[in-house]
Image 1 (cartoon, one colour):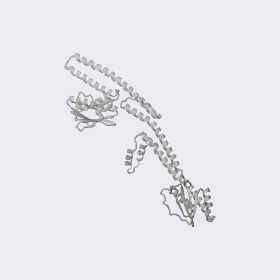
Image 2: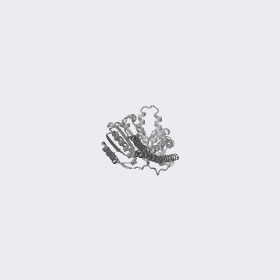
Image 3: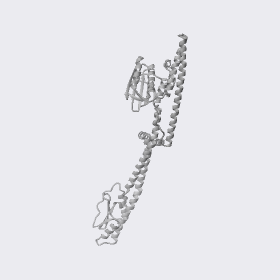
Image 4: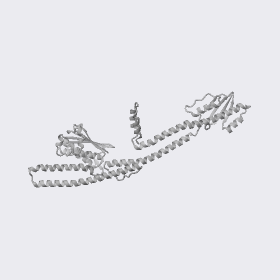
Length: 460
């Protein structure tokens, strides 16, 4: 299906003036869909073949047949002229008229002291006119006048013979191939029938590819797939079975990971609970304060790690979430801590996402801004294809060279942020994983408010 791309790439190797601009113009106008490109790959060669066949037929076959017919009519007229000149009549040409009509299918008359009419305008494209003139000039070699322009089914030919004019009426199909349109009709009809069959066949072959692409996209977003079955050609079915096997392996790994995380979570929390109980029984001793803080830090790190690990392992159905309710909760939390958050929603308020995971994504980004900034503005734009959330704060921001590193698990900046005891270095990593599980991404940039801008973009 990469015929158009291969053609552009091969031709672009030649340094042709203006070719790059032409290539860009063609690239913008060529279809991008597999189905449309496949149809064009079938239709374009067929149209070219039809044009070549039609041109060859018109130029060779039709011309050859017309030449033979015009030559026959010219010979018949030449024979009549020779009979008239060899066997002079006494003013009665009835026998010649009868013989021409019965034997040669020509309607002739002889006008005494007649003259040729002035020449008629010739059509610009007329194969019959040029060939018939050529044959009469070659075979008869007398002054003549013809009329092939009229709408009747007859062709009129007048020959000047001394003081007489031979007037001949021949049927139009005697002088040129008049059934050419039948060939064209059959050719065009056959081409349309073949194109229709090809389009139906291609649609049936491409539908399984589109189904496989939709299934892969849905699985990448975390949706459950229950009705996908490999269909189509052998290669497409193999790709479908490979996708099903890959999905089953990933689901098994996620189930095993979830079971392992549940076991680890239970065991570690049991040990931490014992530590806390022993510290509580030991009493409020100053030398134990550091150990109590270590236990709290371990608890916080454990919860953060489990939240990060479970963000991929958890299975959650897609549901409707109202952006206004979600952002209003974040605004109330900011107000509770004496900080300011504003938001603006453009487009539909309701989005189809995994509710818990999406709420965690928004909460992580908002909490990150709440921890380091005083104000936050969230701009939500919900279009037909994309949901874009832009978080702008007035905090210290993140250096450009570290904006990809902060998405790594447990990565912490060497600046003021690594002094915050409440952070585990997993918030942004969890946020990006959730966005990517929805088929989108999270990126960082400079905010016009002087701090950090986080942009969440996921398919709607």
